[in-house]
Length: 136
Image 1 (tube, rainbow, N blue to C red):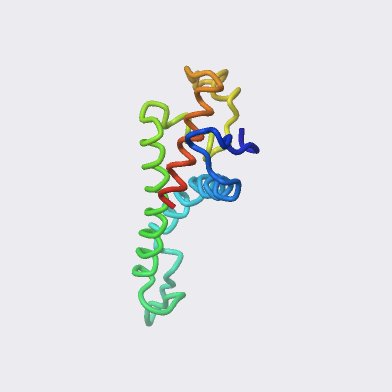
Image 2: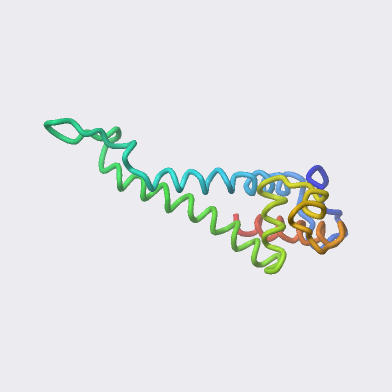
């Protein structure tokens, strides 16, 4: 599924480059979430000396981190919105597939036990990528 673009006859068709952009954007989801968590801890950006506090960047390190968190959170929110619009009840399965690269087999035969067949799930994933590209 990852290597194929939706058919031109599909209502969720995207050109090949747009489809690949949506895939790459979704694959960064977990990385962005981890970066947000690490930025919330500001102790790495500030060094404490006996005389004064020194920061590793110009301006307030807290302000720079807050701006970066806001930027990353906006990207994560776009993916979350596309997930909920594509299918509210299947959002967790879609996230596992498109963001964590779980295969269809892993979703249906592991602890997850997804109730959809491959064609139905593929259609929902194509819809997700279409919505995500519109939001990017």
